[in-house]
Amino acid sequence: MILTPFNQQVLSSPSRQKSREYNGSSWLADGRWLSTPYSSSVTLDNERMLLPPLNARQPIYCYYDRTTKRTKDEKDAEKELLLTWRRAWWAKGFRPVILSAAEATSNPSYEQVQKMTASSELRDDLMRWLAWDTVNGGILAEFTVLPAVPRQDPLLLLLQQGEYANLTKWADLDDAFLIGQKNDVRSAIQSVLQREGMDEVKRVTAALSDDTIAVNNTKMPLAYYSSKVIENKYAQIIRKGSKAETLRSLNKLINYHLLVAWQNRFPEGIEVVKPHPQHATAMLAGALKLAKSLSSCPASPMPSTCPPNLPHCFPCVASPMTVSTPSRLRNSPQIYTIGVVPHPWSFALVDNLRESINVTWILDSPRDTWLSAVTLAYLGSGVSSNRRVMRFKELVAGEADSIDSLWLSAEDEVPSDMDWYFGFTLPEKSMDDGKSRSPVPADRLPKEDEEPDRVNGPVASEEEVARERALLDRAKQVVILNKFATNGTKTRTSLEAWNMADTEAWRFTRAFNARRFLERAEWQMEALSKSGIKSSLSAHSQ
Image (tube, rainbow, N blue to C red):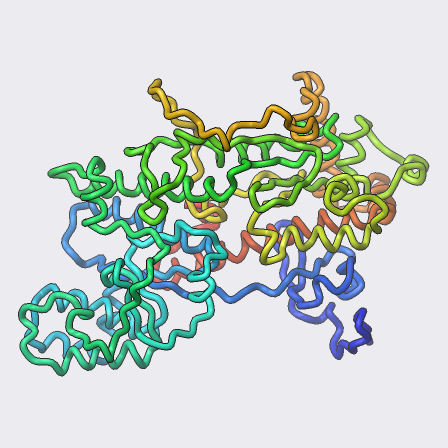
C-alpha cells in the first residue's frame, strides 16, 4: 500500500494503472502531479512521470459540403482554409470537427427537409443545422471565424465549459457562430419545418422567433472574415474572376493576422533562456531558430493590416518583435519564454567541455545547477531543489504559466507540429521586399539602460559551437539512445541520483511534450479514420 504526502491511501498500485508511452517517455496522468517533487514517489518508477490530467477538449463544428459543385482549385483552396481553421481552434484547446453532408443525410429530419417548400438557400442552410443536430449541438462556426485572441479569453473559457443556457447567435457575426444544446437545436429545426411560406427565407436564423434563438449584442472578440468585412477592409485580396486565388489570399491574410495577434500579446518580445551561457549556444540552436521564426514577419497580401477584431494592433512590419537570450528567467506575461532543458549528463559534458565524467567528478560537483540557475531570478537563493522543481513543473504544465512559455528538451529536435501548437503557420523566412516600413513605436524599442543580463550573452566562435555540438551529440548516445547497461549508463544513473531535481525537470518536460504530440496525432488519426481516409503518422503536421 502506498501513502501520498497527505496520508491518503492509494488502493491500487500506480504501476498497474493505465500509463502511456511515446518517444522514449512514459507517464501517468494523475491529479497529484504537484503534490510531490518527484514522480517516482507515486509511480514507483524512476522513468515514469506524473502529468496533470488532460483537459477535455470541447468540440467545435464546421459544416463543409463536399458535394457542392466547385472547381478543383476552389476545393483545394477551401481545404487550406479548413486546415487553418482547425489548427487555430486546436491551439486554443478545442477539438475542431468538420461536418459533412453525411451527418446531415443521416438525421431523422432529412426527408422532411427534402419535401418542404423552401428556397434553395434555406435548404442548404438546413443541411448545416441537420448535421449539427446529428452531433447533439454545441458550437457551430464557419471557417471564416477564427480565435485571434488569447487562450484565456473569457469567451473561450465560457465556451470550453460546454453548457449553454440558450440557442444563441452574435449580432456582429450574422449566423456564422452559433451555440446551443441539442434540444434547442432540434426544436429550432422543427419550428422551421412546421412554418409555411418559406420561399423568400434564406437562413434558418431568419425564420426563428426571438423566443427560439437569443441574439447577443455584445462585441464578439473573435475574428470574422465575412464577405462584407473583406470588401470593406481587405478588398485588395479579392481576385476578380478567380475565387480560388481570392481564397488563397484570404488564407495567407488570416495566417498573418493570427501571427500578429500572437505577437501583440508579448510586447517585450521572446526570451530564449540561457542559464550558464558560456557554452550553451549549440544547445539552444533549435529554440533560437523557433524564436526567430515566431518573431518574423511573413509575406502577406496586406502586411499593414490588423485582424478584424483587433483594429488597433501593431502589424509586425511596423513593430518587429525582439528576441534575446538572457541568462535569467523573468516569467513575465509581457514576454514569451522558450526554455531548453538538458539532461544532467548533457549539461555536465557541454557546460564543462568534457568528453566524459566519472563518479569522483560527480561527488565533487554542485547539485541541480541548471534548475538553480534558471529559477534564481524569481525564486532567489536559499530555496530547496524540491521547491524549485515543483515551481518549474507549474511553468511547464500549469494552466496559467504554460500559456506564456514553451519548454523543450535539449536532446530532441524541436517538435514538427509547432504550427498546431501556436495555431498558425510559422514563417520560414521574414518578409523582405525592399519596401520602407513604418517606424517602430518607441515603447517597442530596446531601452538604453537595459540590464546586461538581458543581452544575448557571450558570442561563441564557430569552433566553439562545433565543439559544443559534438559534445551534445556524444551525450545523446548515453542519455537517449543507449538502453543497455554500460559504464556510461551506470555513471549516468549516479549523476541522475546526484541531480534529482534537474533529472525530474528534464523527464517531466520530455513526457509533457510527448503526450502533447501524441494527443494531437491520435486525434488526427481518429478524424481521418472516420472520414475514410488513411494516413501515416508522418503526415501529422500537414
